[in-house]
Amino acid sequence: MGVRRCLQSGGALLSFLANILTVLSTATNYWIHHHEGHSGLWQECNHGICSNIPCQTTLAVTGACMVLAAGLGITGLAMGLRIRCFEGESLRGQTTSALHFLCGLLLLIALTGYTVKNAWKNDVFFSWSYFSGWLALPFSILAGLCFLLADMIVQSTDAISGFPVCL
Image (cartoon, rainbow, N blue to C red; front, side):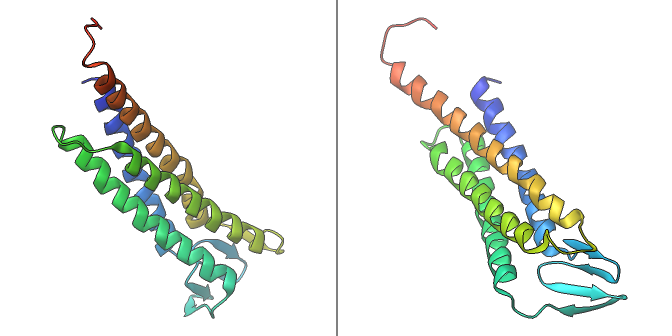
Protein backbone atom coordinates (compact mmCIF):
# COMPACT_ATOMS: atom_id res chain seq x y z
CA MET A 1 0.00 0.00 0.00
CA GLY A 2 1.44 3.33 -1.06
CA VAL A 3 1.63 6.57 0.86
CA ARG A 4 -1.47 7.92 -0.86
CA ARG A 5 -3.57 4.91 0.15
CA CYS A 6 -2.24 5.05 3.72
CA LEU A 7 -3.17 8.72 3.96
CA GLN A 8 -6.63 8.02 2.59
CA SER A 9 -7.12 5.12 5.00
CA GLY A 10 -5.87 7.20 7.92
CA GLY A 11 -8.12 10.07 6.92
CA ALA A 12 -11.13 7.77 6.75
CA LEU A 13 -10.34 6.29 10.17
CA LEU A 14 -9.83 9.71 11.75
CA SER A 15 -13.03 10.94 10.13
CA PHE A 16 -14.93 7.93 11.50
CA LEU A 17 -13.62 8.58 15.02
CA ALA A 18 -14.41 12.30 14.77
CA ASN A 19 -17.96 11.52 13.65
CA ILE A 20 -18.53 9.04 16.48
CA LEU A 21 -17.31 11.59 19.03
CA THR A 22 -19.30 14.46 17.48
CA VAL A 23 -22.58 12.52 17.39
CA LEU A 24 -21.98 11.16 20.90
CA SER A 25 -21.22 14.62 22.22
CA THR A 26 -24.23 16.21 20.52
CA ALA A 27 -26.73 13.55 21.57
CA THR A 28 -25.85 13.13 25.25
CA ASN A 29 -26.74 15.25 28.27
CA TYR A 30 -23.44 15.32 30.13
CA TRP A 31 -21.90 18.58 28.97
CA ILE A 32 -21.84 20.07 32.46
CA HIS A 33 -22.20 18.46 35.85
CA HIS A 34 -23.36 20.31 38.96
CA HIS A 35 -24.28 19.29 42.48
CA GLU A 36 -27.96 18.73 41.63
CA GLY A 37 -27.51 16.91 38.32
CA HIS A 38 -26.22 17.38 34.80
CA SER A 39 -27.21 19.03 31.54
CA GLY A 40 -26.43 18.99 27.85
CA LEU A 41 -27.49 20.95 24.81
CA TRP A 42 -31.09 19.77 24.85
CA GLN A 43 -32.02 18.62 28.37
CA GLU A 44 -31.24 19.34 31.99
CA CYS A 45 -31.51 16.62 34.61
CA ASN A 46 -31.98 17.53 38.28
CA HIS A 47 -32.35 14.83 40.95
CA GLY A 48 -33.02 12.20 38.26
CA ILE A 49 -35.79 14.17 36.51
CA CYS A 50 -34.93 15.40 33.01
CA SER A 51 -36.66 18.28 31.26
CA ASN A 52 -36.08 20.23 28.06
CA ILE A 53 -33.96 23.35 28.37
CA PRO A 54 -35.79 26.56 27.40
CA CYS A 55 -34.44 28.23 24.28
CA GLN A 56 -31.25 30.17 24.92
CA THR A 57 -29.30 31.85 22.15
CA THR A 58 -25.91 30.40 23.10
CA LEU A 59 -27.27 26.86 23.41
CA ALA A 60 -29.15 27.21 20.13
CA VAL A 61 -26.00 28.33 18.30
CA THR A 62 -23.95 25.58 19.95
CA GLY A 63 -26.54 22.94 19.07
CA ALA A 64 -26.86 24.15 15.48
CA CYS A 65 -23.09 24.18 14.98
CA MET A 66 -22.77 20.69 16.49
CA VAL A 67 -25.53 19.27 14.28
CA LEU A 68 -24.03 20.92 11.18
CA ALA A 69 -20.57 19.63 12.12
CA ALA A 70 -21.97 16.11 12.47
CA GLY A 71 -23.71 16.35 9.09
CA LEU A 72 -20.63 17.70 7.33
CA GLY A 73 -18.45 15.11 9.03
CA ILE A 74 -20.65 12.24 7.90
CA THR A 75 -20.72 13.65 4.36
CA GLY A 76 -16.92 14.01 4.43
CA LEU A 77 -16.56 10.44 5.65
CA ALA A 78 -18.77 9.15 2.83
CA MET A 79 -16.76 11.11 0.26
CA GLY A 80 -13.48 9.93 1.80
CA LEU A 81 -14.55 6.29 1.69
CA ARG A 82 -15.60 6.74 -1.91
CA ILE A 83 -12.21 8.22 -2.79
CA ARG A 84 -10.48 5.38 -0.94
CA CYS A 85 -12.55 2.56 -2.49
CA PHE A 86 -12.95 3.75 -6.10
CA GLU A 87 -9.44 4.40 -7.31
CA GLY A 88 -10.20 4.62 -11.03
CA GLU A 89 -12.60 7.55 -10.76
CA SER A 90 -11.29 11.08 -10.89
CA LEU A 91 -12.33 12.08 -7.39
CA ARG A 92 -10.57 14.94 -5.67
CA GLY A 93 -9.71 15.08 -2.01
CA GLN A 94 -9.87 18.87 -1.83
CA THR A 95 -13.64 18.90 -1.31
CA THR A 96 -13.36 16.17 1.31
CA SER A 97 -10.61 18.13 3.05
CA ALA A 98 -12.68 21.30 2.96
CA LEU A 99 -15.63 19.48 4.56
CA HIS A 100 -13.42 18.20 7.37
CA PHE A 101 -11.87 21.61 7.96
CA LEU A 102 -15.33 23.22 7.98
CA CYS A 103 -16.48 20.55 10.43
CA GLY A 104 -13.53 21.45 12.66
CA LEU A 105 -14.36 25.15 12.43
CA LEU A 106 -17.99 24.50 13.41
CA LEU A 107 -16.85 22.38 16.35
CA LEU A 108 -14.49 25.16 17.43
CA ILE A 109 -17.25 27.78 17.25
CA ALA A 110 -19.74 25.60 19.13
CA LEU A 111 -17.37 24.53 21.89
CA THR A 112 -15.80 27.95 22.38
CA GLY A 113 -19.23 29.57 22.68
CA TYR A 114 -20.35 26.96 25.20
CA THR A 115 -17.11 27.35 27.15
CA VAL A 116 -17.47 31.13 27.36
CA LYS A 117 -21.07 30.76 28.54
CA ASN A 118 -20.32 28.27 31.32
CA ALA A 119 -16.68 28.77 32.33
CA TRP A 120 -17.39 31.39 34.98
CA LYS A 121 -20.19 29.59 36.79
CA ASN A 122 -19.50 28.37 40.31
CA ASP A 123 -19.98 24.68 41.16
CA VAL A 124 -20.30 23.73 37.49
CA PHE A 125 -17.87 21.25 35.96
CA PHE A 126 -17.53 20.26 32.33
CA SER A 127 -18.24 16.59 31.78
CA TRP A 128 -17.45 13.83 29.29
CA SER A 129 -19.89 14.86 26.52
CA TYR A 130 -18.23 18.27 26.37
CA PHE A 131 -14.74 16.75 26.26
CA SER A 132 -15.83 14.31 23.54
CA GLY A 133 -16.62 17.32 21.38
CA TRP A 134 -13.18 18.79 21.99
CA LEU A 135 -11.59 15.43 21.18
CA ALA A 136 -13.44 15.31 17.85
CA LEU A 137 -11.89 18.64 16.80
CA PRO A 138 -8.28 17.47 16.20
CA PHE A 139 -9.49 14.22 14.64
CA SER A 140 -11.54 16.18 12.11
CA ILE A 141 -8.67 18.54 11.27
CA LEU A 142 -6.18 15.66 10.97
CA ALA A 143 -8.60 13.78 8.68
CA GLY A 144 -8.77 16.87 6.47
CA LEU A 145 -4.97 17.07 6.38
CA CYS A 146 -4.69 13.39 5.43
CA PHE A 147 -7.08 13.78 2.51
CA LEU A 148 -5.38 17.02 1.43
CA LEU A 149 -1.93 15.40 1.42
CA ALA A 150 -3.26 12.37 -0.47
CA ASP A 151 -4.79 14.71 -3.05
CA MET A 152 -1.48 16.57 -3.38
CA ILE A 153 0.24 13.26 -4.11
CA VAL A 154 -2.35 12.49 -6.80
CA GLN A 155 -1.90 15.94 -8.35
CA SER A 156 1.90 15.70 -8.38
CA THR A 157 1.77 12.19 -9.86
CA ASP A 158 -0.58 13.43 -12.59
CA ALA A 159 1.65 16.43 -13.26
CA ILE A 160 4.84 14.45 -13.81
CA SER A 161 3.26 11.43 -15.51
CA GLY A 162 4.03 12.77 -18.99
CA PHE A 163 7.72 13.40 -18.29
CA PRO A 164 10.30 10.68 -18.92
CA VAL A 165 11.44 10.61 -15.31
CA CYS A 166 12.33 7.48 -13.39
CA LEU A 167 11.04 7.72 -9.81
